Amino acid sequence: MTDGTGLWLLLLVALAVATALLLRRMGRLIARTRELEGFQRSSRRLDRRFGAMADPIVARLDELRRHAGDPQALVELLQPASEALRASAAEVKELRPPARLRGEAQGLARELDRAIRATEMVEHGLDALLAVRGGRELEAQTSLKRGALNLRHARTAFHEIVTQVLAMDPADVGTASPTRSTGAGATVPTYIVDGVDTDLEAGYDPRM
Image (cartoon, rainbow, N blue to C red; front, top):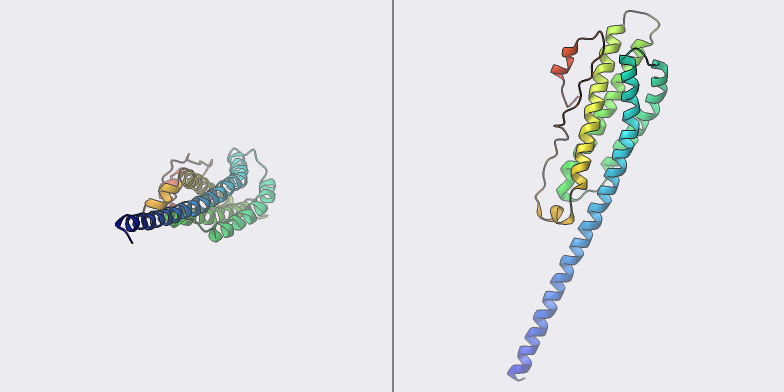
């Protein structure tokens, strides 16, 4: 074998190795892209569904605050919304996000769980409001207010996390280290119920 032939063989081997490495990296990039895009599509769909469930309930609660709403109509709206929230929470827990976005996925699940607890609080308030026996007005208004606050916070925090997820690209999820998502930090309008102690929000716990 001449020196020229050996050099060509070395060049061919080097080219083959470089091509294999390039293809491997491209394969990883394609896999990350598909994984990220799938998680983004699911997050966007869940965000729209969350809004479609939460916004009408909050609007009806605002009407009750102004003594202009129908509690029974809210009861009929609350049950299917609560069931849909539970279905969404189960779906979130089945998602397979990129490793970089596991914290965000946990944040989405956490906010849906908080929204479910909020609807339970609203349900308790409606039960008290519609009770045959009187004397439960304060209990009802307090539960409705706290439920509305939690639902507002959960909805806003969920949307913020989804916005962060949608801003990611394959390079972000491939090079950045995993981070924790708090799912909170948004400034949410204060929910005030007439005739109820308005200092309740001072003791509001975002984890409720």
